[in-house]
Image 1 (cartoon, rainbow, N blue to C red):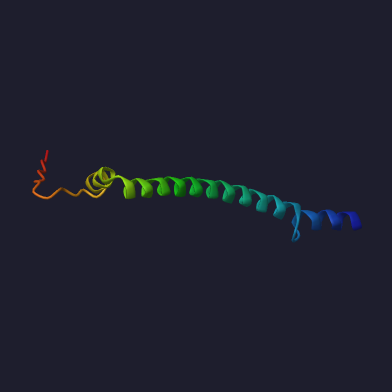
Image 2: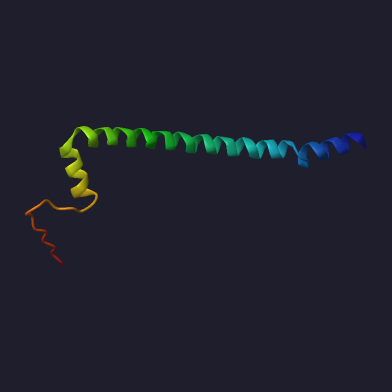
Length: 80
């Protein structure tokens, strides 16, 4: 009887094999997400440095990403 109780406890109880397996899977997923976020942060840091050092890059961002136009410029919108 003791063996059956131990087997049941080790598979379904707190700190069971099943729980450990779930936690390991969660940990791997969080580590992958963390790596993705670290990469994104690195890209953003590089972009900030470019913005601070290169006025042409800042102008490109204003035009392309924000849809801004320069002083004394006209924006023409054509519909299909």
